[in-house]
Each structure stands twice: as C-alpha cells, then as structure tokens.
Length: 158
Image (tube, rainbow, N blue to C red; front, side, top):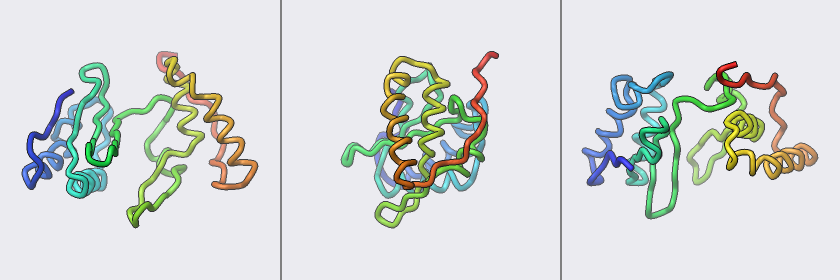
C-alpha cells in the first residue's frame, strides 16, 4: 500500500487537496474527471475523520481508498467503474442518505449489480444472487423506488 500521509494535520489536508486536484495524483489517471466538489468533499472527509489515503491495489488498479482506522470507515475513489457509462448517469440514479446530517450519494443497487456483472470477477459474480434478491425485495415493498431501467452496458473490448 502507498500511504499519502505520515502525520495527520493541516499538511495532510493540503496533500489531500493536491491529490484530488486536476494536476494531482488522480489527475494523471486515465479518464479521471476532475470536479471541485469532489476535491472539497475529500478534504472535508479527511479533516473530519483524520483519515489516510491509500492505493491498496497499486499498480494494478486506479482505485484510491480513504481509510479511518479508528472507525473502520473506508471510502473508495475510482476514476472508472465497470458497467457504468458515465458518472453523471450514476449520480442521477444515486440514492441520497444523510447519516449524522452529512448527505452522501450511494450508487443505486441496479448500478452496483450492473457493475459487478460487467467486471465479471469471481468475487463479484458470487454476490450477484444476493444483490438481485435484495433488489427484488426492495422493489416489492416500494422502498426505495426502483431506479429507471436502462440498456445493458457494453463489455470492454467488444
């Protein structure tokens, strides 16, 4: 793992800000979509949690993970997601949750299922039956409202 922080403090928040900038570490990742709101959110989360940012699957993956060991909270930042055509569409279908007064967007279960199916890894395929039964159960109770249907994603390289 690559840790971007040795000590928590103001310098850490400055490093998070630089990391999430258009010129930062994420800015060099293919298909990274810089958004000032994402940068601000990452800094706020890092400040609140006194977290560290790691690259747990470097160099195989472009995933960055913010971790707070004290609470066990992990937040993953991904420049691309299998089975998702655009972050705008993903955001439009996301469900808002406000734990402790902090509003976060959580990908719609349908998008999570599509992503796991498109990734096609054994560990992703193994959880599909549970996720699909959960989606059916939520749809039958009417909570939360089922996301809009969309055409299946194209597989990479096809």
